Each structure stands twice: as structure tokens, then as C-alpha cells.
Image (cartoon, rainbow, N blue to C red; front, side):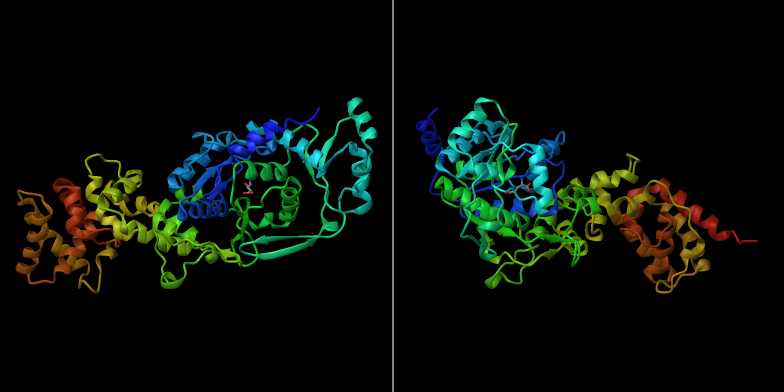
Length: 501
Ligand code: GLU
């Protein structure tokens, strides 16, 4: 049956022309690799930098890898990171559908077109024959047996219902050169390329075929992806050529490494984006750090480290992408994260910190709005918080040696004296505001003729039971409330009055 040329013409007519169009094409695995997040980010940045269109396409033809809920993870992650798409499975758009399994019929039609153009052929070889080939060459390359079938032989097999795949017809001689924006021109001899399968016997496309057909039909101008796909690029080029389609710009990114020798890998325990969020990192910090994993700003921005997403969109240029692998450094990310935490408005910090405070501070009488400001400058990750504030709920067991501190000029004896003098003064306070507590304590130190720290140190130990706390004695007393403070101070007095036998 002759091909319906009008149908193909209609498909071509749908392709938007003129602007930059990029796509992020994840396979739904259930989590977002740091390397994938970087690909998504660069892809988004290229589109935004040139007022182009950013497309989300789900590549789910590899049915074996499907994970339940995995597409939602992609949506959530992209949204959390601010990488908002203009066309995609949920939004639709002019060149949908945007999920590969829903495009299934298209691939078959384009394979037919390629057959007609002479860029592909049907291969009827059975499993046994293919396995025997693997044995002989040791490489697994196909020997081109079915390339040489005559039309009559092919028709007879089709009529007899012999199952077949469709393979790419790679030129037997010559070489193919493709251009990558990051890696430059790369040339390979065609004889080294395999007549790869494009359509499997079940009618589903292979990844390499679907990818080319989709990128063309979606009008993609810039293809950003990991450098593991570099070796497939010559075959892609030959497909574009055989169809008579324009080749997009290739931007292959060097891998993100765990160390000098190993790629980051979830299987080896390296964190995914979701793991990092769980470990208390902010999306904004992760995005900022990941942007610099393999890209550097140039010119007068060359030394700059901190960028919001929209600042990145402005500064991003493809020429700043590096050919060398980047090493993921958790310490560096932590440094970014601490800076982002400090930079939040008090309101936003409270919102982010509250669930972490509540992991250990369960007493509803303790106000997280008073606790959060003590933490903002003192944590690198949100997950640092629960341990820092656990003493609010329950005074930990502590040893009296904590009361000795050289700098504050305190020892156990002085501390006991300070606490004993503090009790009646605190009892007498009518108002329990931070200011009143502060002025009363400073006043008492003055009356006693001691350094402020000589009074504050023992008080803080008594109310917190630890030497390192977010906030000083005044803030902690204010948050705990008068009754609890007096109770804890009396416990301190007991501890200090008790001489070990
Ligand atoms: N689906 C591929 C992946 O998740 C994307 C490759 C591409 O962007 O061309 O690795």
C-alpha cells in the first residue's frame, strides 16, 4: 500500500519553526539523578536564555524499566526546582502526545517512510541465527544478511507471516562526521557502525529510533544530554540524513563524577535529587550548585558563585559548558546550602525549619517562631536542626563539669552561687519578655560585680544541659517560660550541691 504523503506533510506542518525549542526527555525511573537534573537544568536554561520553548517528553518505551508513580516524581522534581515546561504530557501542545508509548503508531509510520527512502530494511533473522552471529564475531554486530533480500523474498516472508524487525541501513563505506557544540567534530568510519534495530518485532521502537523521530517531529533545535550518548550520535545523524531532516545542535555533557574515577551512581549510594532534599538541602541551593557542575560563567561574571534560577537563565551560555567531567562535592553543596538558608526571609526560614524543629520539640507550648530565628545562621542543612533543639522538650542528663568554663570565669562553685542568686531574681519578674529577662540578668551581674558571662554561662547550662546551643541564656529562658526555667535552674543547683561520695 503506498504511503499517505498527505499525512506526513501534515505532521511536518505541525512543527513550530523559528524559535529555540529544547526538550528534557527523562525515562521514568522513580528518582532524579544529579546528572539528569543537570541535563534538565541546562536544557531549560538554553530555552529560557533565548525566550525559547521548553518541552517535557517522557521516554517510556523501555517497558522493563517502568516504575509506578515515576512520572509524578519527574513532575514534582521539575516543579520544585522551578524548571517549568511549556509543553508536556499534562499541558499538551502543538506536537503531542508527549509520552512515547502514546506515540507508538507514529514510529511504525516513520519506519515505513524510511524503508521507502532506502534508509532501513526488514530483517527476518531468527534468534538462533542472531545468536550464532554473536558467537562468530564476538562483537554482536549484525552481518547484513537481510539487506540483500530481494523484494520478492521479502514479500514472500511477509506473506508467510515471518516475524521481523526493521534495521537501519548504515552505508557500508565512507565515514560520518557529526558536530557537537561541546566536543567539536567527531568522525567515525561507517563500517564500525552496526545496522541497529529501529523497530522491534513487537512493533515498538528502540530508544534510538524513537528519540530521533520525536526530536524531529517536536521541532527540537538543541539536544542536551549526557555524553554516554555520544557514541550513538553518528547513527542519529545517518537517520536524519536518510529522512532528509535537519540535524539539531548536539550538546553532550561530560559526566558528573563521585571521584576522579567513578561516575555518580545511585546504586553505589550516591544521592539523587530526592535524597539531597531529604538530607536537608534546599532546592535552590542544589540547583545553583548543580548549574556550576560542568558550566562556568564567563567574562565579568567569571568569579561569581551565587545565582538564582532567573539569574542563571540570563547568564547561561552554551560556550561555558566544560568538556571535562565534574566532581560532585557534598561539602561544596553544603556551603551553598548554608548560604541559601541564611539568605531566606525569616518567614521562609521558619516555614522550612518548622517540620524539623517539631521532630524534637513536640511541646506545642514551645513556639517555633521564637526558635527558628536562633537557627537560621547556625545550620548548614535543615536536618541539623532536630538535634540542635532537642533540649527544649527535655532537659538532657548532663555532668556538672559543663559548668566549668575558663573564658566565662566559671567553675562549679561559682556556678552554684550564680544559680542560687538567679532564682529569687527570676521569681520576682512579673513580665517574661526577652528584654526584661535580659535587663534583669545584666543588672544582677552588675550588682554582683561579675562579668555577664559568669552569670550567663551557668544559667545556659542549667536550662539547656549542653555547652553548644542555638541562642544564649536569655533567648532560651524566654522560649522555655518562667516555670520551666526555674525548675531547670533548681535541678542545676541540686546537681552542683551534691558532692560525689
Ligand atoms: N531518556 C533518556 C535518558 O533518560 C534521554 C536521552 C536524551 O536526552 O536523548 O537518559
